[in-house]
Length: 172
Image (cartoon, rainbow, N blue to C red; front, side, top):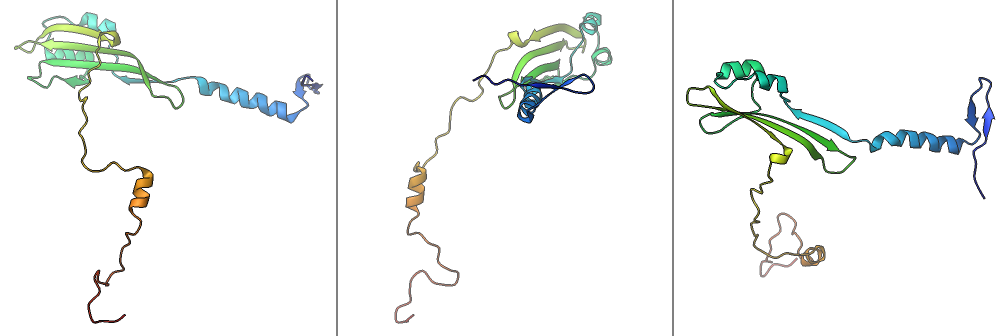
């Protein structure tokens, strides 16, 4: 048997389903549809290509900061490189966020604090580096849930003020 929705004419010329369940299903489907779209987040500072083209080798740090702003991060050793980092991340519902785009503009300075080189890196240029791949072993027993439950049978805390060993010669 086929189910069909009968439409009743309205006074204003439109149609309305006769069954409220069908209307509720259509509305639920319409409301659930946007939930399938990813949530896109933009992080960091996106350097415009026109600004990079205006940046000349030999410019000093003040000119770079005036043109691009303060960097996302600075090299730890000798402050010899500035990095402008931006990324685009997408997240679907409850899944782990995925980085779909990343750009890193690296500006390297020489000893006189002048621009020596400008490098542009993308997500394809990066490599995943596992900083720590070992685990520290722990000492002791590895008990299951049942082992922990049954291991505590018979171990009760005594009330405060009572001694653990009864005193000889005293009656209770």
